[in-house]
Amino acid sequence: MKGPNNHIALIPAYGRDYLNRKAVVKDFMAGRDFVIAGPVSDCGWCARYVNRQYLMAQWRAGGPRWVDIRYRRGLRVAVFELPTRFNF
Image (cartoon, rainbow, N blue to C red; front, side, top):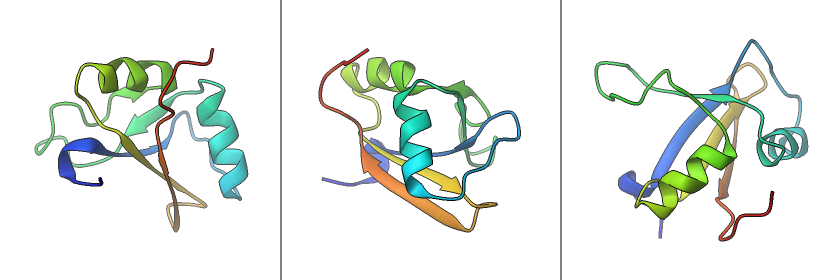
């Protein structure tokens, strides 16, 4: 079930951008870094660098379950559920 407590918004780190959802998911699953999006004043976690492995560990501890990654200069969003198991 989607909701504010199990949902996190990310943007690509280090100036990366993507043209399609497939490339976004591929890099996320490969463990590339992303930045938690949102105003820093609203969220102590915002502007922090994270990757899939970190988010999976947070999910097991009760963290977010759904991921939104903005791409194509922030105009599009890839929304998907974190995998239910570790597959490194």
